[in-house]
Image (cartoon, rainbow, N blue to C red; front, side, top):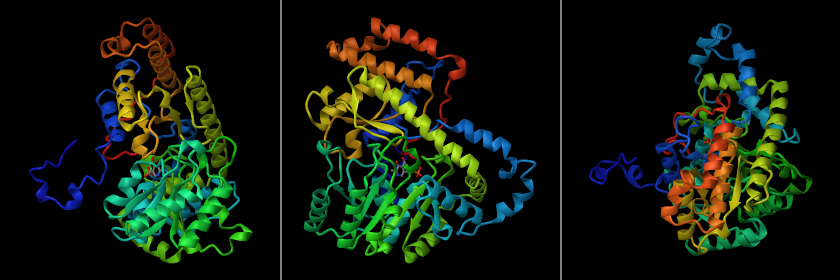
Length: 488
Ligand SMILES: Cc1ncc(COP(=O)(O)O)c(C=O)c1O
């Protein structure tokens, strides 16, 4: 959607017209392909299935039940209306005490209550998106850089760089050691920046990782802490997938590492956590983002900056009540992990049936699928060719590894928690059908047209799709999916 034509670009600022949002990328093109032709079980059964969206929709029944049983938490109910005025006029950028308390408690619970978070350090932002930008504004000047291990979430290019002028210097991680962040890779990225006269101000990690779905082990976390202390740069830990860990090894927060006995020399002023309820609770629409910094000056500055992206008080009110309900939170976290584990198993086993592997993972809302053997050659161009077939012919929006700055072509992120079981089955059948056809060598455009109509295999799959898709299992589509506002 090009609102800014070249003709009137001169009327706008450089920032408005510099393309820093990153919208022109395969990652967002996939979303547009989905927007143009979204799958619907009855109205558009041959449409594109959205598997490029890291949303967690598996536990909304539990949340809805809580909302019905706690009408006073919503100020637009008879039971909650008494609070309406107080909530509507509250605009303190410290946030409602119950909200800060609820979030701090929840963050502790998600980390097995092994660490405590101070409600007075909770700073609000518009999602983790706003939190990252806020930290970039607080910690770096235009031209400065953050090191970020690859593959990384494509939204970082927008969040860290677009409006701040901060650069990202990739730390190249590779599949040969399961994309581990090594000391050598850290040092090499740091030196590369130095040679280009770029001042490195920090290191940003995502733990659990998007797109890998893996957690960082204790040794790696200690290595990272040692590295940033030695270089005297900041460490930002994006932990927004903390509660999506569904199997061993468990999640270890940076908050736990810095409390270890032998970390007494760690400069806590360098440590900052980014959190959000977009993934763990599945509430990206509420835009609840958090900066939790151990640095007082950063906390104070970020709080002032939060005026630009406060969480609505109505949302704070609801979230405060929800997260302070220990019984609900305990049940939700346990159930969510269980459902994610089941989904992950169904999906990875389904892929394995046609010989498709993925990086071994135990967290996240996606898998990192390995299609290297389906590439004509190991290049980004070949990855794009395959991706275009998958999106336009197989009709699945998955995200190519190159959009995550992956150094090796052939990896794809595939989300599995933003749909119901029936839709997941259909996606799996499409993948099976595609792989079986490829292995038979049926791949030329004329034959690919048969994909949706003539082939025996496709037809039988489609019939089975019809059977599994009973009306009560239909999944309504999200009414909006503009790539301009969503990057998950
Ligand atoms: C690693 C990571 N950080 C931040 C975000 C942005 O999250 P939010 O919706 O809270 O802005 C995402 C969204 O996908 C993400 O994957």
